[in-house]
Each structure stands twice: as structure tokens, then as C-alpha cells.
Image 1 (tube, rainbow, N blue to C red):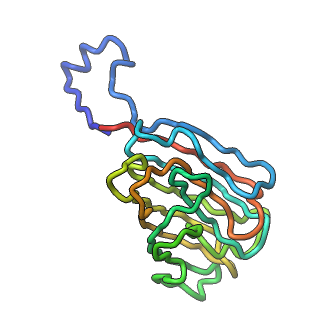
Image 2 (image 1 turned 120 degrees about the vertical axis):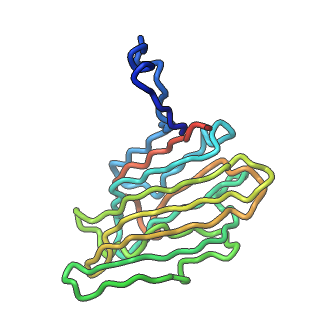
Length: 203
């Protein structure tokens, strides 16, 4: 998004506020989940219109205990099974202050795998106040030249209980366009939550 500077003279001469530079986030779709669903997909509006797509997942609440929030990508077929190579790390802190740590978690990594990638993990239980929220960026999904990079940062309620700050990044190892994104828990339904998809205006 371009930064536009206005001096005293230019502000004085403004005759219509809508002539000012607008923001670069464009809301394309909202999945508002109010009852149990197995997954939440976005299968349209992912194209060359934008170079960067942003997904915001808000208060994702699982129906099952000890489950992980995940993502996968579709690369032109009918399934969400794009090959991915990823890396993850996290920080965590227990409510009773008995444990705090920062670590790399190679058990969450994929090495050219087609399965779902954990975004955040160890939700612990499915009590009414437990959930996770965060963002996922997908870069140049319509490119047919390069691999497709993505990265996510999230905060989640962890087991026993604790706060997690989760970091995940990687790339879809394909030169085919990515045309769909799917979110789900590793077991059970998504009980509730909101996922929004935005396109970032090209600069």
C-alpha cells in the first residue's frame, strides 16, 4: 500500500475526501461458522487480481478435545492436496507460571508432503472459552512460474492450560496456480468461528 503525504497547501485544496488514497485491504469473502462443519473452504476469487491474499481466522473453536487447527491448498484439481514444505516454531507460557519456553517443533513440519499443515496446536479441550485466532498470508497464488509461499502467525489456548504464540511458514512446491484454501481441525468439527479472506491491492 502506497504511503501518500499531504502538505498544508494540498490539504487546503482538497474538495472531496474520496479523492484521498484508499486502503489496500479488500474483503472478498467471509465464512461465518455458527454450527459444526468439517472444514471451511475458499474456492473462488483466488486469482491474478491480487498478488497477496490475507486470511484472518477469529475465535476458532473446536468441537473435539486435543485437536490442531490446519490448512491445505488446492492446485487446480478437486482436492486440497498441494505438495508443501514447511517449518514451525512457537512460544508458550502456562497460566500457573510453571513453564515458559520457546521451541522449534519439527514434528509439525512437512517435507514435500500433501497432508494438512498445522497452523496452531494443542488446543487441549473444547470448553466454551477456548479458541485460537490469527492470520495466514498467501503470496502470488496464480503464478505459473514460481512456488507459492505462505506464512501464518497465531495465538491459541493450549493444553494444561497455557498461551501459545505459533509461527508457521512454507511453500506449495508447485508451479500450478493455487485456486483454493481449506481450513479444518485435525479431528472433529469446527464448532464456531469466523474466517475472512482479503486481497491486498497491488502497489
